[in-house]
Amino acid sequence: DSGVTQTPKHLITATGQRVTLRCSPRSGDLSVYWYQQSLDQGLQFLIQYYNGEERAKGNILERFSAQQFPDLHSELNLSSLELGDSALYFCASSANGRTQETQYFGPGTRLLVL
Amino acid sequence: AQTVTQSQPEMSVQEAETVTLSCTYDTSENNYYLFWYKQPPSRQMILVIRQEAYKQQNATENRFSVNFQKAAKSFSLKISDSQLGDTAMYFCAFIDFGNEKLTFGTGTRLTIIP
Image (cartoon, rainbow over all chains, first blue to last red; front, side, top):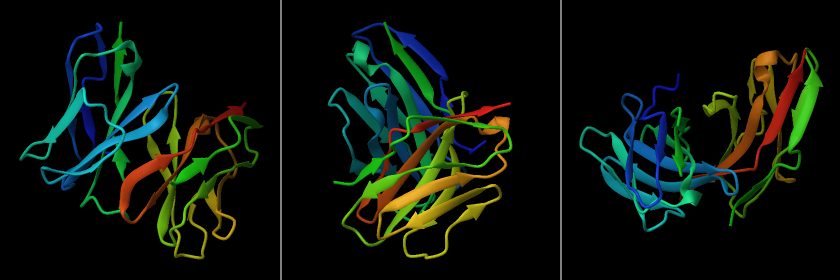
């Protein structure tokens, strides 16, 4: 158990809908990362937050947004969902978001868009 | 752009044998970090081992060790005395300063045969 929690574990929804994925980092970690794992794109970085502020952005679609709250939990919002958004979404956390720190991954949220 | 290549999509080995998973990467940076993550059927991403590029000594964690060849940009993972619980996808990952995201390879599916 990495100490990173993600809810829900599974999510099934329809095209065009909006969903919110939630992540709580390890105790004491200030930085949260979101990654997407899909069959065709592999594991890809989406976005990073540090202490409530966006720090780095990857190939995140405009339909996707995220935020980190004062209690350091983070939410990833996916809207206007398409079939291709079906994937496993991981949250990871590290102490201060520095390069030399190991990122610890949560169990993931499996999203299925029908 | 940083890239990570895992040229072995699948491997299998008998229980108790030793297996080596290959990984090469491309970067123009001199200071960076390399990781091996394991993803068992549960889909959890579990850190196996990490290596700092500035360290000449190869990292080891119990039955897991790496062969880090900086000049060749090679970072292989050796699993000794393989166990059934080692059956998983193994991902090589890379991160360098100024680029906070982990870049992953496409993974190697390892099966330990009883």
